[in-house]
Length: 113
Length: 115
Image (tube, rainbow over all chains, first blue to last red; front, side):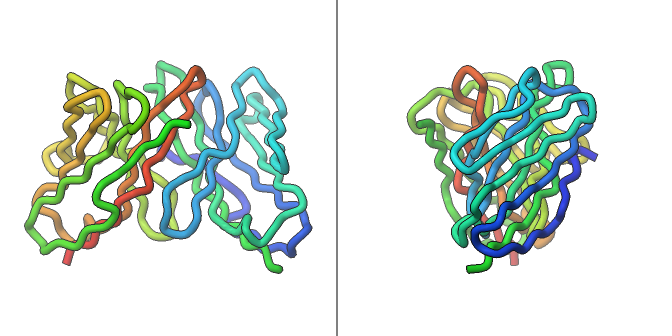
């Protein structure tokens, strides 16, 4: 299967709480990217972490990468109702894997106000 | 920032007809573009890699004769769903890489409904 796995599949939290989503992938990567998708819409790029990086921050987002475990996590701090969306990780494989972006299954996040 | 557009945003067609979807990079050139399909409540599945000036590369299980891809210029790739059937109904999204780290920029998607 192309896809990596993500957990949880769905997450429901209260506004102000933190949300953590995990992702695993299968091949060696150049980088790993996280995207957000509102219902029925296109994808918005959130953050990219390179294979030689372990942690990266951007605003309320914190992403970690563990290449030994082939896993990544996305933390959204102080969540807002507007953060409600589907979140996908996508691993950019190395050239020998076709330099392609392979998506995880996604996590549906619902932030209740 | 890099912007990718798609046209049309949605299309309804009868079974057996062909549908063309355009993907354009508006403010940058893209020698490579990617086409994905997304079924409801599922993730994106890569269908094919569109290469400017050469044949597209299709993922395993994707019929190249059914999903025709033409990358006619550095800013335009088209996906034609030939002889569409109801099972082809889906959300089709394209992307193009841009920048040093080749961040993928996605189009807004095209929703296809085949009756």
